[in-house]
Image 1 (spheres, rainbow, N blue to C red):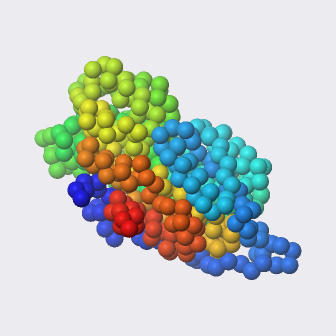
Image 2: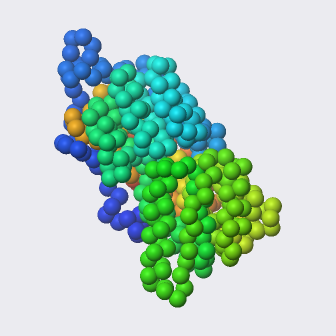
Image 3: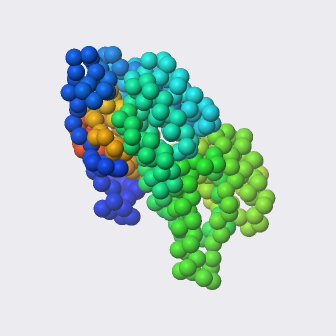
Length: 399
């Protein structure tokens, strides 16, 4: 079978993608604490819950846009397979709504929460609310930055209810996408972001800048320019405005990065360029696969995209589920469990065909596999996440 999809880290991150890791402010995570006679545990944590008595909340920017709906589908499948109830709150990456969503899910009786927050600062309130209510919480598509948010990081370390994070190597993601543009010949690159201060965008931006800086150092007579970001939040309308603003403000612009935002800003951006007759004239790259990516690659609406990471929240779900069951317990003072999840890159219709076959038309995991994964040790769960690829799915489902 002809395979063109390239996994993040296959060449760039060899040795960096660990099968599993624990980020610690102190010692590594340990085993489950013993239960005391009152129904709690000796260290004050809630007693482990039975599988049929668990509700897990999902705080997400949107459960209905392209990426969000994919996330919801895979989490729903895992929840059903394991007899777990799930409840969603869409918070639009608006800080007040992000923190309110955690309060809402705790009040609804959730015993665990997975959250895609917008900024690190929101996690202080989220963690404190969960700690007060004895609810476990893990991030997906995000991780608190120890360097940029030391106090928030300390809050996570100090709470036994902060389980950890599942996230991607966003710096390498951004670096790779810009290098694809530079190799294509693009030199004036517009940058469209979603929310000011978003931790994931900041990491992708670092990767974009790194690629441009390296290129300019190596090619002083053929320098590239990356604009400052224009923010589009998470709507297609604002995406369209941002894309046209960048084009009109930067003569000679030949490429656009839509940093993310769940897919809707990208839909608006490429739609605006189509309306202006710019399809194929502006090379557009982004993160978060579109539903019609194959068509967009054929028409020139898209040049390349990274994505396929909608299973990220699935692994955060398993982290929290195991914490609620008492299987994963971190030692006092540790940050928690961390899983680094791979991206896939596509830059042609052929690239997308294999992804569509094994990730869109079919699910990458069966119900039976999800039941088995729910019982994995952390090391095995982290290894399963880092191994996920087209080849991995083919090897598991070929029989």
